[in-house]
Image 1 (cartoon, rainbow, N blue to C red):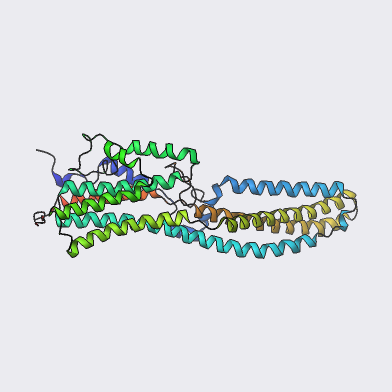
Image 2: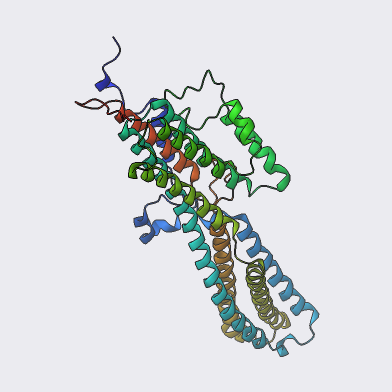
Length: 397
């Protein structure tokens, strides 16, 4: 006799390990209570502070300020006569425009991110509901498993398609071919009579040949799903087409297809390039003007200190002005450059998805969502096959 079913774990060992991995923090899973404590300064993973481009930009601005200061101190004859206040006025004018445009861009990027996440969740929820509906009716298990397998393969295809969009054009086809090869299984190893997490995202070689000729398998796979559901209705395995139950089942497929279209619409329709390019240019111009303004102030101070005149006044007045100017000139560009980096990261929620272990800030953890989908489907199948005290119902035409 086999092991007592009540003593068997609900999840296999491999599934428990996957669950532990999925508990790692990502852009959607974090403890918000830590954000109101000083632990917020210790956070690095998944934050904008791990972006090397941010620190490179600030380093270049610092170098520009130092070069400007040296140029003013050693190349200008009377640097104390320079009107550095004019640069400060220009800097103040640019800050108002840059702050306004950055606010609109950041708001647009957040809305786009939410649209992508909502589309994925709508797709996954529709797949779960479709499986539950077919299981409740007691439809033929082989047909149900085939239908759900196509649904999950569609979700994986969407994930791979969005991941490939961040790759260069000449690498996208190779990326897609590699992922479809990984999903392909021999018919002997892929049995639709048994549904497990290991076979939910698999396809037959014949299915792979057909899907390889399709531009977007994530959408077109739902042609197979709806056709299979209609075939089941015609064969009497589920209620017939004129019935409300069939309409409900088909509406779930329509909801899943709508989720795919929502994700692709949010990703494909980016903010106009002319708008985003203008914002990025204005941020960089503002940062450069700020760096030059600070460099001129520092250069004037160095020139006066080099001359040896009024050294006490330099220490008491000019050095104080330099310190204040340094703080203001550093905080402004750093803040604007950080907000620009955050907006760009959120506007590209699938950047870095080609690396499943990549912790790109703002990335939607689709791999984790797909893993949870397979676990939920496996748990639902487990419960369907182990009813407490009644037999599984079977629909009769």
